[in-house]
Image 1 (cartoon, one colour):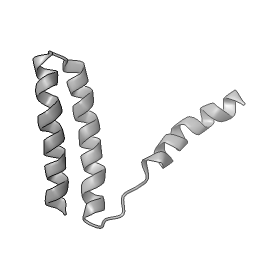
Image 2: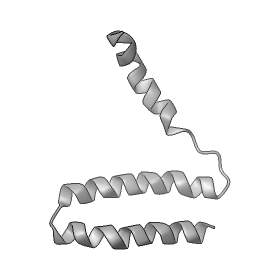
Image 3: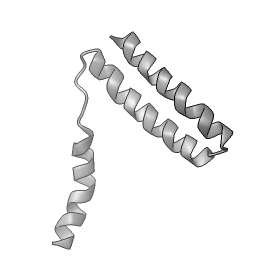
Image 4: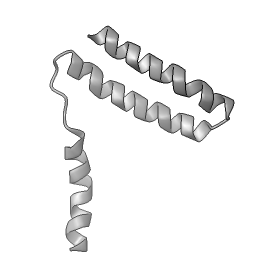
Length: 71
């Protein structure tokens, strides 16, 4: 299963990265790389059966005070 997951990530990289490099879209390439690494960091342990923390918990902790302040 892990091989299939890594293959899927490699296919995504092979499709998107050459177009970004050819177009000299360095900021987009950086953002793409960051989000791809985050996705891989969350997907691989989950595929191996490890408990992965929910990213929504962190997002709620950051924005909840702002939402409460705006009410």
